[in-house]
Length: 417
Length: 121
Image (cartoon, rainbow over all chains, first blue to last red; front, side, top):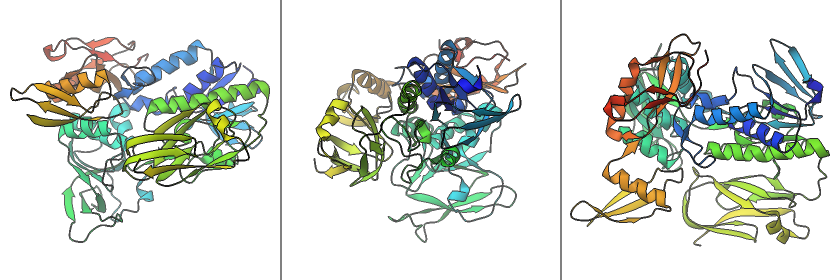
């Protein structure tokens, strides 16, 4: 392949990137190129050796590597081009892309369309402002996961986990099985951050204490973590005096949220949504920069890998279409505005001219509510939770009800429906 | 009649279910499930809970120090820790294909441990 011929360039080869590339190729894009900075395809899936992947997408309970293998095979079968150990360093507003590797040196591409699929990063101690010393032994849960599952190191002997995100709970189980003493999972909110099934199979199964409405207020130790102080928090998440207790441990894992990786998006002039942390997209998962699409965790953090792949397929399909037919003519734009008890809505805008898959996250747990989009979509829920994203598929014909000069649609939870 | 609350973890939905247990310890009624598989799952979860075990094993002659594996069928929950210990002594070397049996009849359970990735070198 000549690098000048690329129709669709996909940045990243995790569950989003591979799904987008496969879809783009299936939708008729001739030259699809994946750029991956690691030495193999699959992104983070390789270190996720646990099962629970693909239950919805494949109807089978797969591990991370198994899920990756299915997509890798398809990438090969379809003849999708791949550049490994290649770092994209720049994207410009006019879709010029610069990458670099140690074989070709700098590579300059002018793809017809680009799909951003870089995924996300973990929040770290610096973003939490936990007081105390700065000893060794503080890891993000994902780093610990890589150490334990890929590199073959156990990070410590007595572990406290701050935050009950899925990776944190999964590491609690993994470390327990490796003989590590997991002293507890400390969560500032009144409910777990991750999936309820992980609370059951990772914490309950191994009798690991879950301390809700608690947080770490101090880290102790000079060379190495020696203990952490935890305290109960009030409704405003402020530690309550007199509730402090010390837990002796040599390791603190942080599972306190993920942030989309935005450096390249920013460089390309892509507008970001402060509510989800990733690019603002329309229903085609196209950003404000024509020809630049985004899908998966780079847009917003999903609960399930299956949704990551599905969303990226939307981006891949439209990226393929644009590469064949030229830039889309933008007719109308309707902005989705988060209303009562709604934290975020993706996509943030729609044209009203094609099918839409919405991903909606609520702010707070609430029982017996009705979810509304404008005045034409309504669904009743027994309970909504911030840890469980709501997916809504709307067909274009349903959107035909949106005639007129509508410029905004409110998405909201209504009480008592 | 007593009630037992069980969260179904058969799929990511995580339905909260209630089982009515009669005086003989038998399940008389299941409430709160949304599918057939879920009913089967919570029934099993009440009688004898099982889990798939995933783990890594050491390698020889490979640049990768570890290699991911899983059990091809679920084990009893009570067997998980011993099963994880049993895998500590296992070493594999390339070539291995995904799905290949790494260890058959783990702890005489009739369950096999299989590769969840390819190991080329």
